[in-house]
Image (cartoon, rainbow, N blue to C red):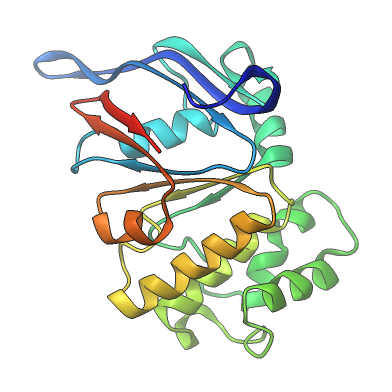
Length: 230
């Protein structure tokens, strides 16, 4: 484990995840343990099917492990019910998906406003405009997703994830649908966000992404950690 107890933001302790299949119970993750310090950038690597996306979902409290525990910001997610996990996630976690998950009928600023609007915040629009400026989209706030490039759509998704000023930003294959130039643009943005103190975990199979972004690599194979090194 890389983080000491004093600065640990996130900890997984002997986490396992099994799902049922026609052949019986299938282990997606087995005995996964690590700790992550505030301000770290971590790349979770592995081939397709290694368990990367499942691990990120467990770390965010979007799913529950079959065994072990996940602790985020001094809260044990695995001891909470779904509403409790959602409350911790809303306060501390931003999540970025490969496929953007933008609402097609909403403009960029309206998409970014959603988390604060759902929380009843009256300053949702002004906050969204500020965050869109941070990610370089001040001139695109009124555009719909179909009017934006793939890289711009991912920037909107990242801006939305930043609206709650999260302690932890999780990104699942954030450059998977982008060409190399747009991918590099997104990586630069993630690096900039990290320099301002946000802890970032990126799941990827792209070694180029790791070279440009990752400072620590956790390598999964067959649902187990086989390497964990800076």
